[in-house]
Image (tube, rainbow over all chains, first blue to last red; front, side, top):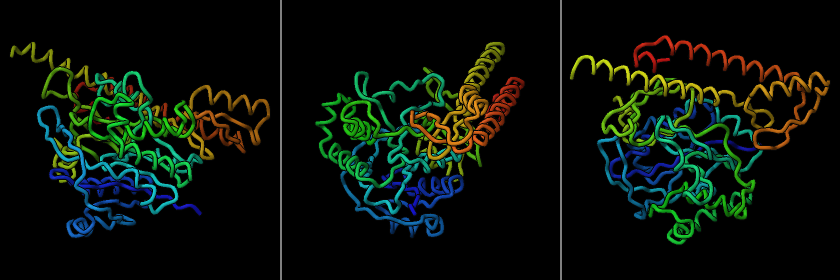
Length: 285
Length: 116
């Protein structure tokens, strides 16, 4: 019988405690999807010391080496504050070897499960499922930047959430992702990607394109529905059993927001600093 | 700020929130219309419901082939059971949508709008 479970990556930087976010994400995931969750982290000992009770939520704690290789990225915290921080996102391709499950749901620590939507997808026969379509909770922002990796190029896929099964094709897919990561400047130029920082979404999109023999093939099956998200310029203000409330940035009015709420829907909350404050018991603002 | 202008901006904020909440409610509803069967995915639409009903009317109720949202064929062992299940989910979700849509209309404060 196939084992099914979820995996969350957590590699802390100087300001964001990804382990804390992962514990919170795991609690939500278990309460809605009722599957075991494991964590892949470079801070396993620290986690067990800092969160002795909470870390028991994890089925397995999988250690990876602490690496000094990382990118730098601006992390916005609403519209009026931002920080340049390390962005450790270089291990995603290793999930194939690290996961203890035959079929794995991988989520980012800022992807908050709020429904059972993904449960059915875990029963699907497809060996690789990923979100392509997305929906912004902001009415004005639009999603064109997430349609293709650039205006003239290939479709964009979200590495934030995906489901895979251990098959030979999927193994090669992750080999290609690693190859793209190791030759990022080449692939960035080849696919005319403007941002210099390595990003898993781009690497996955390119790898899917290559797996499809550079056509619109069938390797990646789309996850059902859309990936709902709020930007890091928006703020989380509350989250209960099924409802999340946000302050969404207004267009052209710096520091002003519009309230929005969503019910029974999973949301990618890009403002990790706001999410972190909320988990600490604050309002997230 | 002049009191009238302040009131006008309050109304503008309310209208912006109302409009966005309607948009979110519509997408939320779409997400809830996803239906899984035998590892395949369907969005429940009037077209799917009508097709399932047509299959029943044509007495093709056992091991009927449907094409799912990913264009993959899926064999539905019991079409009547499938039909009952999708219509039940469709009516629940759309009734909830209608109730919330009407409730939103009656709310006059932003805080009430985002509580629905």
